[in-house]
Image (cartoon, rainbow, N blue to C red; front, side, top):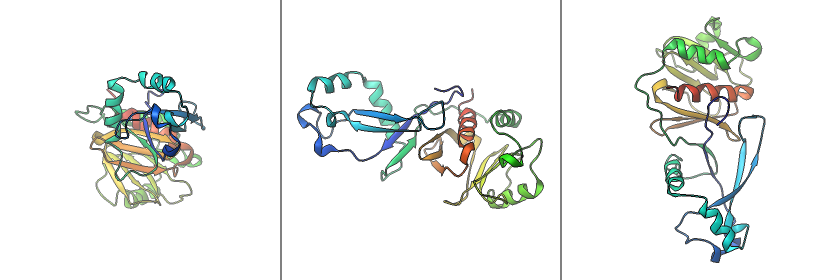
Length: 243
């Protein structure tokens, strides 16, 4: 857990060199496998940006070493793994996937004033940052464009913040955060939206920014928000897990 209170829990899907495995030192093919991992720090000082797990049976021929690795895990660890795997989209494809082991109980969303306060804690306002808060205020022409491109003209609630995607000049791509929820449109996908009460968590790693909803739906926004991906992750994850 980092200073922002965010827990970075990820599943990585990737191929493994099973052909080189010492089969006499491992479980049956149908049983779980224990990985050995290396990590890359990246630019965010609070968490690793990526990791590369390899099945431990592929890096040692020592039955004792493999047994010691497996002994570090108990039933709760395997149960958490099963919970996480159920959240991965199928069919499985390589990549990093943000997972939530404990879905936040949300009886009602945070008040708009509290959401606005949290946004102001992380998001800098102004043209130089391509990010606007309300107050001080979102330029009307950008807000109108964002309403049409991201919210498709729907009743979006009270606008609280606008974060533009990299290279955007007219608020056609990025995030519109309102008192109701989050509306978005990015070059690589279709427009979408979710209510604050549906938000389970957010994460940002080597595959970019990702949001997970309480029903298991996930949105992957990649790196289109550039340097503000960490800030957006922190504020969304904090709102999702607020008491």
